[in-house]
Length: 199
Image (cartoon, rainbow, N blue to C red; front, side):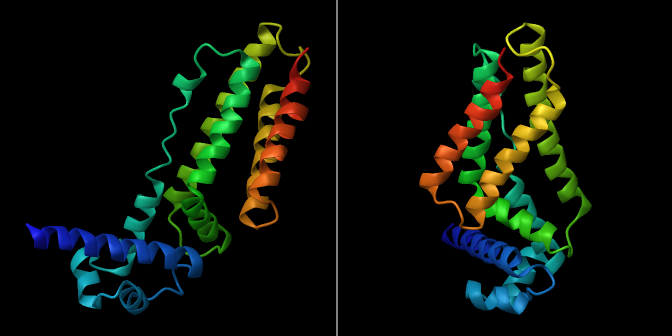
């Protein structure tokens, strides 16, 4: 039984090390020898658990995608449209902040323009689209109820909110925004963009 646990621990150690190296160096610049050295395992153990570099990379991607299934609909129940939009902004920001390592992993793969499966980019785009569409639907609902201004464009306003939110998050990634400045920026985003939608 103990050896089974040791096998799981070894697999996790290899996976954690590989994910970190892939995200900081990219696929092409990460060798299995380097993963083995940093994980303090033999290269044979990597082959035992993952067969090859491609499978190790795919497993690292899969693991990194696990937290990306956000269920926010229940959290919005009973809130006004304005409060729903603000809650979505907070939840999106919190989610990215809590999963910053995996977000950086994806961004580094995409920005390096090197090996990354099309389904990865497709999945990230789909998540963005779902979130933006949810925002747009809430804005449209508020407009139809007369809570929000009649002459707004729900799709454009949702896209603008997402773009501003991404800007705050990117500043944080780059180290230009300390947590104490990110929070006021987030509040300002909600005040200047969301409250401006109200009649």
